[in-house]
Length: 96
Image 1 (cartoon, rainbow, N blue to C red):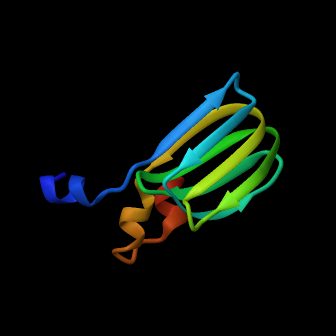
Image 2: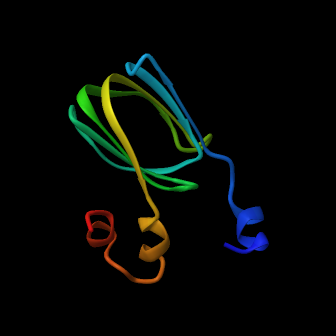
């Protein structure tokens, strides 16, 4: 990644408290969510949160913030949104 690309990226923060609640900043879009999985597009790539009884308590796309609660089992990042801008299928890249 070049210096220009790094400078162009905005801040992204993920805060998890006791695997129960979390705050995510730098959110561009919420692609899907249900009780077991939340899929977010962030400034640093795709973010998949898996667990049980997951809820989106607050969503502010203007501020780029999402508050979540539930039992968090795993968190995974993917750079899939980079490829999607080049015409590549988002889900094929995410689930490689």
